Image 1 (tube, one colour):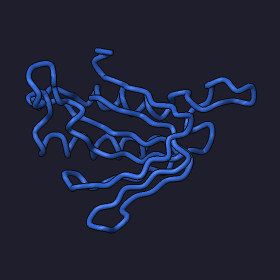
Image 2 (cartoon, rainbow, N blue to C red):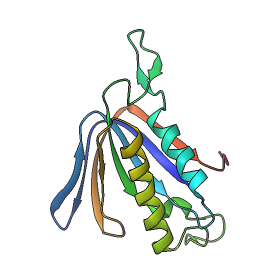
Image 3 (cartoon, one colour):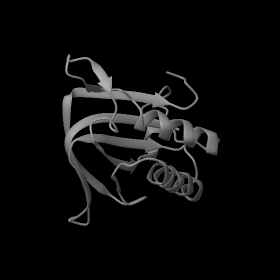
Image 4 (cartoon, rainbow, N blue to C red):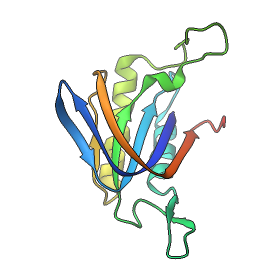
Length: 150
């Protein structure tokens, strides 16, 4: 799995001119599923993101997690995180999971967080054309990969 995690003051997602998810202070998570991801990858990413210490403490150091600051999560599926642009000018998506598998692991990711952590989680709509409004705070943007490739 891969994720782009952005610390936000607010964020929302719109599908067909209707807002389907919004959060205040917290994290916007763009989540990609790879064709060989497992439940272990999903759990690693969920735990890592929820506990990621990228909010400032009283000393101005990034030392607090979304849980610590009463933050919220907006999780949006994004298969393009597995776009490989090393050859040519058009991305290859051969490592991106099939839609059925990706949707299943994406839903497990959201459920895993909701079941284990006292945090509000909002989502986009899987495979829909979405418009995101992201008010990045800092800006702070973190890239994560469950296989630790970067």
